[in-house]
Length: 283
Image: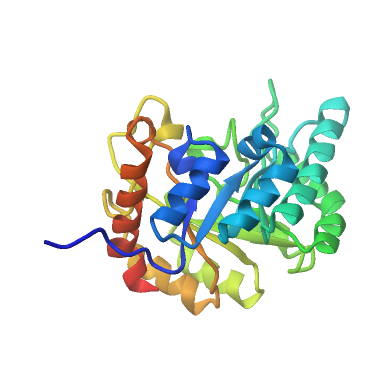
């Protein structure tokens, strides 16, 4: 009889996968499972308080692969937009304090009553321009995450890796990069050449994995699955990310109500196992 699977050394447990756990619990579960890295979210850090959060992470001995999330930049100039820019400036500082090399940006959807997709994308670029200097000085990469097109109206007007790179290339690679997330990008016929493009410019700031399976739930935000439980072919994507020069941690980030409702320790164990079988063998 074999014991639990050993965690791949580059596996990072994104905190969203065990959404209902506190920061302290997340760190403990990762350590107990032999996972070396975690992707953290701002809300649990705020609940703990930044000073305590920093101490907990340092005491755990874990690496932090990224901080989620910044973004939501698409409002027209005014109070709402200024508040978003200020919140993202604070997020950059939090990422630096917690030791996260990247702040993941979910850029935002169309503003209410707007159909101006091109204008929304321009406002994303402009907001990143306001923050790039601060991020560079802090040693944090603003990591633009393209989301599947079904989220373009409400979450992210950047839908392809090419669109994300187009913005990132306007700024230093030390300040602005991109996220390659299999759930959002697996369908794109230009994915592999765009991964090569991102690698050539040293733009890959994060690699996130989970799977896609149909039918989608009523709330499509919660459509993610363990790697290997859906239709995504992780081998060519992972090979392309590796060939592009990415050597960082690889996050498993899952939004799925059934998984969230399961015992957290079981979810972590299944994450370790599924990552090793579907992704880790290609690293």
